[in-house]
Amino acid sequence: MASSKSGYVSDVWKDSIFDGKVVFCTGGSGSICSAQVRALVHLGADACIVGRNEEKAKAKADDIATVRSGAKVLGIGNVDVRSSANLQSAVEQCVRELGRIDFVIAGAAGNFLAPIRSLSPNAFKAVIDIDVLGSFNTVKATLPHVIASAKAGGVGGRYILVGANMFQTGLPLQTHVGAAKSAVNALSSHMAIELGPLGVTSNVIAPGPIGDTEGMDRLTPASDVDKASSAKIPLGRMGRVRDIADATVYLFSDAGSYVNGDVLIVDGGAWHTGGGA
Ligand code: HXC
Image (cartoon, rainbow, N blue to C red; front, top):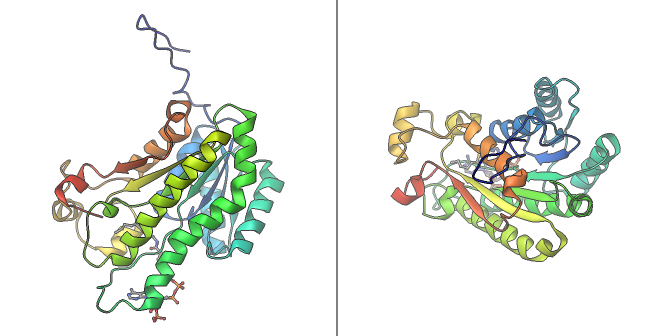
């Protein structure tokens, strides 16, 4: 434990801070969420990642498990977050095999670029259902375990919902995503109020444009510098998955224990310039 004359004592920043804890993550096969989980596993946690594609979920789980000797990482496929039954059964498997759930990352998201004039009601609904209903279903299925974790003391009892910085400003071709992510923020705020008295926290991490992801490559196949410039990012570079992983570690660590109902925007300051993802 490091201490100093200032009286500040830090027992937070060490490699074992999440020892014995379990994180459940939707969208965990994707670039951002897998980086979040990888960091937590590196710091001692076991993990369960769920996704629609079984092969991808299992391969990603095996890959993440290599970051720490003895790490248990479960990959569960055929889970569509729009199905509460799918999530319920994934949560049961997670608890059966890993024993508990302390942290939840609701990261599954749908996205494509489409102008509102050609966006069909079903396309709008698909993204709302994946992002909003999917986050709700994830919370509902995990809640008893997360409350139990909060009651047990130590770090635990925490939710992170993955949003996007575009709720602050409008962005062309992203009506459906902006609407969905705004609702995700509201969901988290209400959870923070209702679950806070049980010791459970809920926060949103709202990434801006993250360069090293499959999703961004698919949405905007330009160079990193061009993307940063067109997204008007004051720091002059695209975000990296590592930036989101670091924010996640902070919010789940003891250092983040008093943060509840917040939206942590991690976008290099882009939203101040009207830049979006
Ligand atoms: C217009 C589209 C479309 C597109 C699908 N649809 N793709 N409309 N442009 N590119 C329409 C379909 O025509 C259909 O409407 C409706 O959406 C549902 O499509 P389905 O394929 O049947 O739905 P489903 O299988 O449920 O898939 C929905 C999906 C999903 C949203 C397209 O496959 C998906 O999201 N895939 C990508 C996942 C992803 O990239 N996640 C990372 C997100 S990153 P009709 O009317 O024809 O029936 C992220 C960060 C945010 O979110 C910031 C980045 C900018």
